[in-house]
Length: 117
Image 1 (cartoon, rainbow, N blue to C red):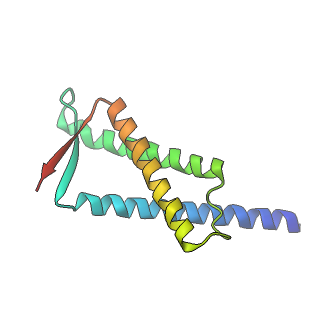
Image 2: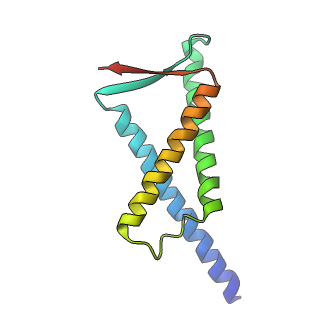
């Protein structure tokens, strides 16, 4: 009984930390979207009506890949880490998410265009 309870608590903590990290990435993406230099993904071979759907697919794919990667690496256990180490882990996870997203968009035929607002 005690072993299953401890195992369940560890899994719940991992899931909670992963959700917090994903929330922080989503917030960061929103803030980046509001910056003065706006980056936009475009695909000349597709109608603009399909772009939003592709963007959502790639965001969902990237989020899923990141969650799997964090679970594999057991990086979700932040109990014995300092605040600085946690910030580095969040930064590394954000870089991984951005990499998954950029690869997905590129594979779908999109190009990143920087625009000034």
